[in-house]
Length: 474
Ligand code: BYC
Image (cartoon, rainbow, N blue to C red):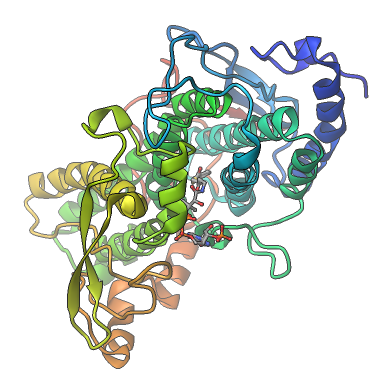
């Protein structure tokens, strides 16, 4: 297939004038399409989906909407406009000119960061590939596919950087991004959460609320990078990312809303009664929240990290919203950490601030997560119920960092392994919870109709009504 890249791949990087890059992408594109066909959304490749496509970086109108078959989506390459005055914003080289090319000594590290970022994008598409069958409405089906094609575009964004700046190594890494697969025992995705199966829509909403939000904070950190093309790429990716978190936030909101309606109709908050009526009881929502929030906490890495310290020192990866901090060098500051003392208690330790950058970012993330939880709780409170959703402690159910493998309560109090096992069913989705949630998952594919376990959204997409035919199935 011969491709006119100027037409087929909307871009603002002047692809047409760079023959080497063009050839590299020509080689990669059919492999990407084959991957999309094999591991992208199953069975909906010929559907016409009402999708947003990024077509420029203009703040006022960067996207166009229209019906597209997903394999024909125009996966474009966009970087925010270059700011000729941009300077390095943190670390040892603070105030110097940003880099348009990669300094040799940082090549391997930057490649690793870009590959780790890139790996998550196709991973999430793989995790979600079966969800189309059980979408609670056409509106939701469209949102799922919107998220999927944009994760595909974010993969393109990272592959562009690998091809344009890392030569042969970069091309090999780009191929491997399509060879590792979510949950594959031999070649899994790099980060833990991206190997977890997503079989149901409650998990999908939790993932888009909590895990896409890790994406937001990691992209914000990389948007500070001294390597200017990476920074500009991530800045633009954040524009799309907002919708993904909106899908999660409003999705959970609608689940809670529907549950409250059923609680009111039946005048009961008994979980079994709510379940019998086909809605999701709030304690089950809490258990799914516990699972995905804690899994996403691990994505920030260890509390104490020499990797994070050197990313910061070298100006490769900053703190989200670095400008809000007073001291951008952070060499003399320290950070107070509460760590397990090995005998069931905690000890306080002071570590150099640069080594605590993962923890600083995790803290900002947790505060951001709280905003949605407050909103969902307002709904519950308004309905007159005392139940509250809560974020568990950052010590709970951790697999990475100092609290990895330390059993605690959701409040973060260390307990014995036996006590944890005895309460696990109360705190995390049990097999029977999962079976129940799966039993609710049936595709609803008529315009405007909703599954019984979720309330309709307040409004449709791009000023269209909720009952718009967002996906035309053939
Ligand atoms: N699972 O010093 P450490 C997104 C590895 S989501 C497995 O503690 P460091 C999206 C780590 O790689 C955003 N391994 O922390 C969301 C390192 O391995 P190596 C994705 C883990 O190095 C939804 C070792 O442990 N972007 O965009 O600072 C849908 C020691 O690490 C995990 C990024 O993550 C884990 N959870 O790593 C679609 C940005 N955590 O190098 C998309 C790029 C840590 O020793 N990545 N490890 O073999 C990074 O900035 C950093 O590598 C990390 C933290 C944030 C992952």
